[in-house]
Length: 207
Image (cartoon, rainbow, N blue to C red):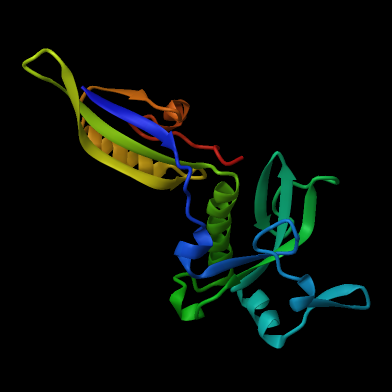
């Protein structure tokens, strides 16, 4: 019998740090990523425009995006005007997402593909901000001659973000290898989304 223990990851890494490319600049002083919006933009006849030609080009080519922000309990970062729209809980001009490396280092080449890449990053970043991270361990329960039982570690890993647990589910299924198993742990409830005996269902953990 194998035991799958599902746990919350209480030491998640900021995606901006391990990604090393996309970086968020928040225009809210409450956030660690705060930056003064006047560093990037100014107003001309009531219109918000970039301060520099370089930023204008980044926005046009998809290596920078203006962001919106929603917070009601949990938070959600999104490309401008794509997230939840609420009169009281949404900020349409909330920050800036910038690709910090050379555009040649980005696999996406078109504006549409770069926007898709940015959305995927924002999903992980939102999960990080909400503490929506998971880890697992798979152990095998072995019977001893004395009648007691012990557990042998088969596999374990942390650092899975709740916006997409597809990879975690596939790793657990590989460790189970078709054997009988049971699920336990503080995050046991998430197992209903993983369908460890077959194809994974859709997950909406970060909403």
